[in-house]
Image (cartoon, rainbow, N blue to C red; front, side, top):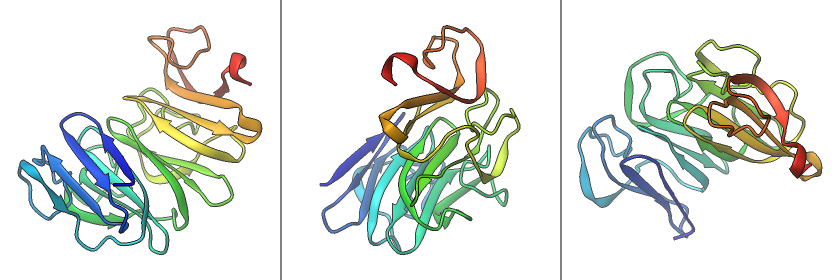
Length: 199
């Protein structure tokens, strides 16, 4: 196993043969095997090869591939799969625009990815500004994070996101009720802000 990801009640693993296997809660199709049911044993996500990174959200999962772009599956109530078509997808569906992903992160109901070259794009739920585009509108199509240069890593919490940018600086945006953006606020910030002590 090359990588593991878990969020609420499901787990996914990336094996050395670059396939993805998932288990646990699957009522929203987040296991990706075409079924909407829980399973205690790992099941392979069909149709995915050359996977390089994966991320699990509350009830959705995404995988970056080397040749075919980014795929997501599971709950889609906030367009976290990068489409508006249906409330859930039990098999992987391709995310538009993110054709060359190098990293992916999933929050409760939003998703972010880094493309080759460092551009960070996010989509899905945005009530706390966790997509970083300056708005709080739910967005079904990936949009670039405002005020963030080339990034190398991205992580997502429930309703906030952080990325490591050029020069190893760390930037965060979204919900800050518990100080998770490190900007000494108790509200939210819809645009990327640097974490001063880590610059």
